[in-house]
Length: 283
Image (cartoon, rainbow, N blue to C red):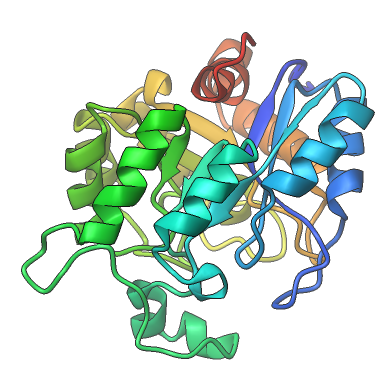
């Protein structure tokens, strides 16, 4: 059976050109393919370039699908730079990702070095574990604009600090939770803790589908069961040349979840209802 993903929203779609990796689609192609699949929205993500301007240009010319962008607080935009975030939000950014490939977490695990990204890596807390002044400024900007704060690739401890500080004020999205290739490789128990604090857990196709998969799909289903489908969004994190394009990949992911025992209603709740609600859209 093919799960009906009409109205879906992928909050994590990569696109090219990209200085770090070969990509399967341009932003225009990713949006066109999402529209052809009947998806309601797509969020274009870049580790190095704010994508809100591109999304604003594409949104009016891609019929049937809303196209959004965001900004990753990586070294290319000055790290935790409130001025860059403020501009991106003014241009319509829907997601602000905390540091990804430039995070201290990815530097410590060697991910950054593999891509030629220098250390020492960016943190969102100080040596005492308190949020930095820049982090507080960025959180305030995200709250003021009603945007989504995504955790990026920061450490598990930083995930907790951010969620405790922001979940009562706005939407916290745990970026590709349980992903082993980047970030803190959160456990099911850690995802449960973050969901209990008010975060939404993003589970992505990349983690269990395709050329870069590192976990069986049953691991992700265990997380869904632990935190509940009300607190999970399904995305792809696709756009790598080695994998399907994002729109096709979301369908493959949904169908694999169905084959593994989830109902179509559960899958649609996580792929359609929840992400659209975070974007402020009606599914």
